[in-house]
Image 1 (cartoon, rainbow, N blue to C red):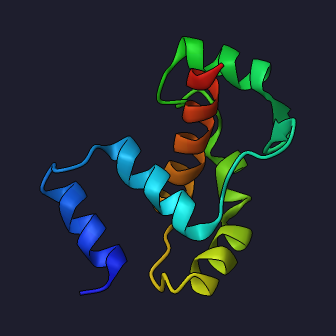
Image 2 (image 1 turned 90 degrees about the vertical axis):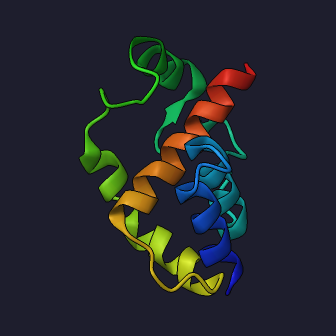
Length: 103
């Protein structure tokens, strides 16, 4: 069983949280918030969205879907052969939430 399958199994069995799983996946894929902005906005913009909805469901999915091409390349390069739009959205939302919560 590869690391991705094992970690996904842990998530499905509720041994780790949604956030823990997707932050782990972000780390495996090398996706991190390293500059002043992320997906075109600074932390204060994301924080205002997060304050209204901690799941960031008030951000159009199209913003995350637009990143799928780059996400898929990162996934394949890291050996994760089954990336989905859902994975993409959840990874980016987890990275954003972690950044906002750390401020």
